Length: 388
View (tube, rainbow, N blue to C red):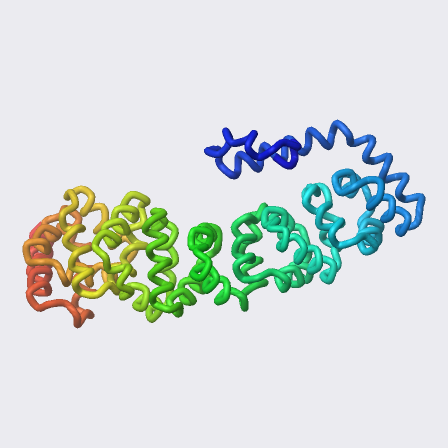
């Protein structure tokens, strides 16, 4: 709306369009508008070179205004641009930043002094210009980014991170604000920003997912429950399961034993989404740490799956050498449910059964009757294989 100079309500019909498509359209519109006035903007920039920086700054503030100044900025040499910026009021710089296209001003933005970046960031966050801040994160230096982050509250850091123009910069941002992450998670709980926090988890690497998951486990149980409820309400388990997969075992146990996780409707939703998204191996670590009753409920639901689905899940488990993660589920199944598993085609494979038996032999937590069933089946498969 800002690029086109129209009221947001006039673009309501774009509400269902993806953010990436909106971004592409905005860039195309900006390019078209810039191209139509490019020669004029370059002439203004050339004229600005002929006067002292102080005079150019005065002209920008009194005559050009933020919009024209933003257009001219891309044609100004970086050193000259920074000299002029240092002489402009922070409010004017912030309003110019709102109109600026970071793609065209990379050289200037990369040289932005940290102190100035902090002042502009402070003004923009007070103006609730999180989108503008998100557009510049990937364009400024690390020092400027640190200075800007220091002026932004934990909650606003989360809001800005969700709106990064350059999603590829998110892991770098996490490294820069590593000491702020506990506060960011706390703010997410305090201010109801779990949807925003969950939205970030898809974009970060496993190292940062583990960090976020381990920090989440340190939250007050009620706050952690609010995260679980948000994931449940927004059907975001496909986002959260990759986090539980890489959490430390102690953190995962805290998460798995939270009452909100143990609700049967939650467990069903987790399982359904995991299977729909091909995330069976992501589900197993969490399943293994659920309390017995909750794990039994999940195991019963798994045992009810069609034979073809079960066969594929067990094959995935064997291919990934994850028998140790599956056995806690098998251990709470009834003998009939275990028998159904043992009849699967995949478990008629001597190699697969050998892998399973090796893990069963090293496990001391399985009920004796389950061990006997698996062992007897393994011996039968082995004997049949030997006979062949």
